[in-house]
Amino acid sequence: MSQPHGLLDVLIVGCGVAGMSAAVTALETGLAVVNLERSTPEDFGGNSRWTEAYLRMKNDSEVSDDFEDHFARNAGCNLDPNVLDTVAGGYDHWPAYVKAHPFPDPELIGMFAQSVAPTIAWLKGFGLKFGPQPIYLLTQGTSRIAAQGGGLALIEALRAKAIALGGEIRYRTTAVDLLRDAEGRVQGVIALDPDGKRHTIPARNVILASGGYEGNTEMMAQYIGASRARHIRPVAIGGYYNRGEGIRMALAAGAAPAGEFGSYHAEPVDPRSRQAEAVIFIYPYGILVNAQAERFIDESPGTVDAHYDEVTRTFADQPGGQVHVIFDSKVDDIPNWKRSIRSDIAPYRAETIEGLAKLTGHAPEQLAPTVRAFNAACPKSTGEFTPFQLDQRATKGIHPVKSHFSRPIDRPPYFAFPIISANCFTFGGVKVNANAQVLTQDAHVMPGLYAAGETMGIYHQVYAGATSVLRGLVFGRRASQHIAGAIKTA
Image (tube, rainbow, N blue to C red; front, side, top):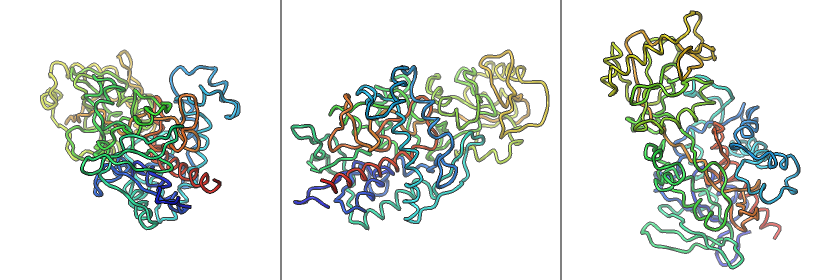
């Protein structure tokens, strides 16, 4: 089915799970495919290389029961009821402003959910395995499995398959603009080669799978806010390669924006660590204090998997963008509590709160009263401690309240970890339909242009945990399936 005169059928910008699943799918149908990858061969894969690839699924053939509902509950703030009324009808009858709306519409999410199981079955055909894996979240409100070997296993298996099928990856090559004809059809990209020289790469179709803008400080400041963005860094090295060109070039060509541009998926990490995703998830069992030794948020509003995104984003708003979790030796009452810590650096430790304050940089005369006030607000009744179940043991007479696991911090030695809000990926991207085709502001399909993974926007408010890898896999595959179908029937 390849086109004559060496013209590419599919040019894919990016080599994470979205770009590689798109490449293999297209190659399996006989299309001519090239992937562009900003990084070196050793670092290829963007964020996908570093993720543990948790999947919001009950098993390898069923998504979680709350999969679609979570997206519906976090579709955007103050949604117009007229929009919600309209989407209750058939997609073909939606007006343009609804089809181009930045929210994750039911048509899109329904297709997403239905495509997960077939996509996982396809990956299993390459020898990849999926199932329950240890996770650092001590309390969960949904079901998860993971890819054995994480995201690295996924992209390496897909890359090997792509190369075996005749695919080509051009490393250290960055797409910077779209090529379009007089009617607006995308016909390839302009890219910078490893020497920084501009080249034109023609192609019948382009799939943008180049990530978000977590590695672009200018875009972070523009969309997240300069005062917050300066405190936020990517959660792993792969994020530094994601600089937003795919999103920018699509928007400049008239694509509709989607997702929440002013937000991102946050994880609480130890800023001292050089490890990727050095998360600190013990904070629901202690207290969080800012640089003034003040508590500023409910540390345990519910299961940690459902709330850590919004809790962690508040860290960037605190002075210096850094907070500390303070806890004591009663942490040993939590079986295997250390699995909630992925930092390779030990916590600060002291026999007194005042001594701990000196290590963390807090004024002892500020931290000690904060701890005493919290201790006094903890429930007096004693009973069995159930660390893996919400216990309703809330503080009283103190603001902010702590809703669960409120036990006095009074058994030395005392411990503290510094934590910052790290950026897994940004929420803002471009609007796509169920075929991963990019839409204009007037909901027209942009001929020849597709988007998948972080480059497409579907998240608002609270991230639907363990769906990002699935998003990349499903929509990367969906884009190439649509291209192959269109070429076959042309």
